Picture 1 (cartoon, protein in one colour):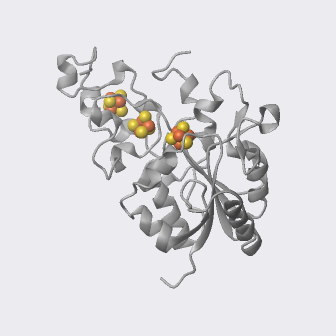
Picture 2 (tube, protein in one colour):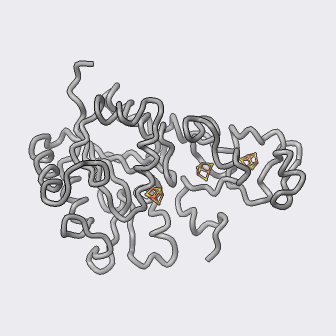
Picture 3 (cartoon, protein in one colour):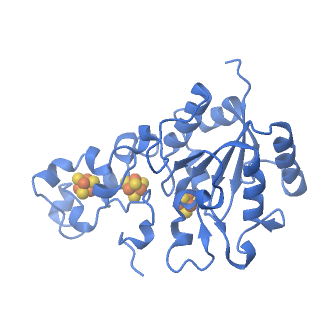
Length: 265
Ligand code: SF4
Ligand code: SF4
Ligand code: F3S
């Protein structure tokens, strides 16, 4: 309780901002408690009151004051084409801000599929040459928290772990926290008994759909997707995509836009 709050700089690159939308809906703990009592969110162009020069000054002051001791959270990725001109922050290409803020960071959290694997911006033919954080920054510890967006409780769970233990959580080979990403959606899905029994939805809104049968034949990617949706749920645990009658599109898996989810190019 007496620990100083952990300084966090939260950058926004090429993204849709829905990782932040997810984060602010965290219920356990509440996002407001994370921001006001647990971390010191010293720079976040989406959530901070300051704007323009005042905001950019906050970034520089925090880097100066906490060299080597702040967490750099990154939402979105950095486009490399045309010298990074597809994403400008503070009058400069985002890639410059990312490299600058990463230099003295203690560690980096890559929020969401944009930052961890490129997501839709990096989908074929990737016209802006969008690159995920680990391809831009190679000399810092990175925690990847994929999902489009990630689950709010997973995001605050990662921050809470860092605050509590002051060390990286256990990570898998892809640098995802195993406490949230070690199981497939399919391993914990409540429709799994239907899969095992061969009971499948054959067309949208058929009688099998009304019975809540397995969505595998409708393209569900649960068998190849590692995420906590089937256990943690969304919106405070109320539901998740499969609970709403739509299969998982594998939004936390690398390159899901190009790997035959529900979208075709
Ligand atoms: Fe938006 Fe998805 Fe990227 Fe998050 S990962 S910023 S939700 S497109
Ligand atoms: Fe697996 Fe998807 Fe069927 Fe659930 S709905 S059992 S995740 S294939
Ligand atoms: Fe994404 Fe699949 Fe969960 S689409 S939100 S990983 S159920």
